[in-house]
Length: 338
Ligand SMILES: Nc1ncnc2c1ncn2[C@@H]1O[C@H](COP(=O)(O)OP(=O)(O)OP(=O)(O)O)[C@@H](O)[C@H]1O
Image (cartoon, rainbow, N blue to C red; front, top):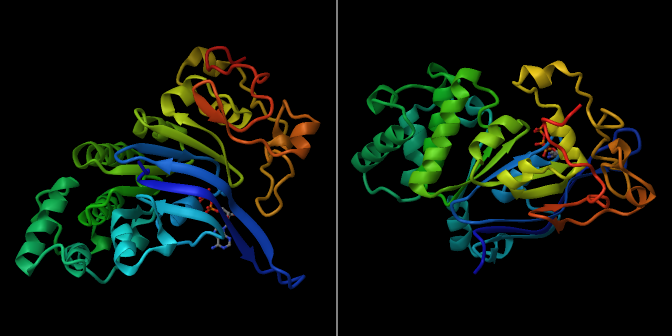
């Protein structure tokens, strides 16, 4: 049986115009990505800024046509679909972005923003039905009583409330998958947990799969506790598996470094000077990625092989890792960190 969505060897190479030399510089934002998503699952996609997470989200939602590879929705290449199939895919895969203010039309009320798509897609047959459905959607995302929000404009709401409206708009089209790109990074810390809980509820109650894109391991750990985790570095996947397995025994040296950078609540461990297991703190430019394993200039375990040959993603224990020396990388745990 085919997956809900599958990225088959997808690469996305942008071209950045260069004023000096006239020749555009290629930017490989995603290289040879092989990944699939199953109905109803939650996948946290993590990595540092600029590693290609948003690009992956935009490829998955059909906003970028990849330079190479295929994106299959329920087994069909979306770029070879007929109009009807493509429209079903676009309805089925929704994007929720981090900037809720930019994502909503400032000139339209919440009712207008939420009723337009369902009327356009003929999911309701009258204005009365649209009204009822919008109220139901607002209830579902916790904006109650809904009548209080219908006539509001985006600027009259808080960031957290606007993010709930975006969730309402996304679920209004009865999607199978929502790509949530840093949905809580621009809202108050105090409201973040509530939005994450809302995503979790929508996943459980409506069976919607989520791809949660973030650079924040703590929220990834919370939202995908029963799901999967995919770690990206410079446009490539370096480790993936069930979140539990990946975090119980992180294997890739990059993931170990990311975890070492997370503050620890335990004062005994926090007191110890924690050094990042990295040769260099600087991330190389994605427009000029190092040859071989892209992580090798920063890696404590790199050798000549790593400088010359790009590692493949291979099953290692319970997870999939792309590292030539995964066997010799020491086990990482917070408690044993010195
Ligand atoms: N439309 C575009 N044209 C040219 N380069 C682009 C384009 N979109 C993204 N890039 C480049 O691709 C690389 C990956 O960007 P992307 O936004 O996917 O990373 P990210 O991991 O989501 O980072 P952030 O968390 O900062 O958003 C970056 O170097 C970015 O500048």
